[in-house]
Length: 324
Image 1 (cartoon, one colour):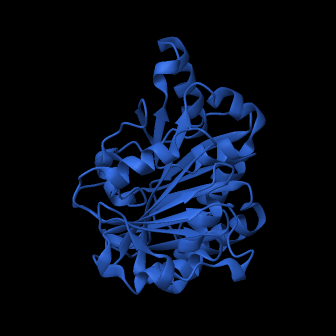
Image 2: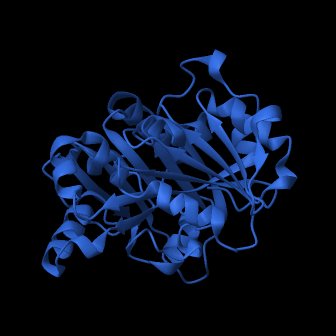
């Protein structure tokens, strides 16, 4: 990911299964006296661009709430809505997109990869998933969407912890960690988590994440009964950018439907800057994020979160990108 652009508006995607507490968290954000204004996009149907006639005209439908937040309800093209909001960007400090409880957050996240205007004007800050500690185990058994919402998350609000025993809570968190061991988990009741822990998190800023959690991309894997796994690999030799682009491009085109998230920090040959790569399914993005620190080992690290991942195949593919 590129270095932070102060002109870009941060966007938080708020997701979670039906009844988990998304609306409770959203209402807290909109009502607390935090001194910031947020535009809120509510994706009621979970589908983007299916009915352009129902796209709300932001000029007429955006309105100020009593605490200064700007809200609009969306039933259509998210890109157009974001474009409309950019025309009044001085009226808010950030954007929150709330998905329907039955939605996979991937289509929303992909918006920030596929549209140049969206990429130029907004910054996907983090995917925040609200999970119901009491009902999550059952949801993981009967809903692939519930697992996807966890797998895509940068921050997980594990809500309704007062409805389970300490032992049950540990079990639920273990299930979450089996799907996504990289997200930050907050245990809450009534979604009572400090707002600063869910907004402006730079969840997609790998440079910051690695500085705070050096083992973020350590080589480990956890299997889940939905066949979701987290796998990461490390190489201590320079990477050939052309080889990497060919490999990752082919991999995402052929297996991207099953690869939910990809993140990596790469050490390119004859390059003093670190390259941050990320993808949502088949949609990929990347840029240089600054120089390697003097004395730090120049290792390339990449992590995949997805279904049916083939560890030996991914390792061989990554190692085939070594320069030389």
